[in-house]
Length: 289
Image (cartoon, rainbow, N blue to C red; front, side, top):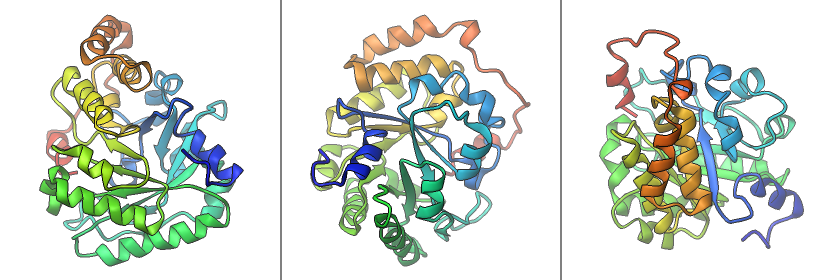
């Protein structure tokens, strides 16, 4: 898959996409614009039961430095664009917040840049991607392009033509991997994107079966893996659902088989502890992005 890459870049990509061609990335970068998101208020504690089951983490540089043990040997995909917060009406006003040199010093496997195609700051975010790719090329550092939509364009997250447009543009700029949403006709998005795609988990789904079916369908239609966050660490049994997702991604399990695995692991011992009481506005905020 990566024969045209330098050894260093192949090595870093191999920390994300495993030898079987699949990837299970755990997204915990939400705090860069959402602050102490429910379920990830204390990242070091939330991560304890999950690290052994993730191939890689997508996270901010500050959380890597403060909350991830140095014994973690998986991949690290560092959030390199930001400058927006959940309070903003327009989420697309981002800049580059992490250089490739800083990322390499943090032992990053890749950096992640969001693009907001069709939004007010579309051009700025595309230039962020271009700048990051040029910067990263000096270090043979892979770049993950994230097709973000923001609050004002949320309906685009299920629009096949929009996702194909955004993914292809990210690949045309030189992104090595693309993260996007799953949609009807997803196989067409994959076919039109000449680099590997991982799917976003997006907002909380209703059931474990819904989560597992999303993963299974995306892989069946060409995704190399998932970059899932809230549907894992906001669930009642995070350690159980991540193992079910892993069973689909790397074990070839069916949805039914993975669900049986999750149910067998969904014990009181594996139940997520509510560290803080939920605020009444939390649910509404979660659905905005």
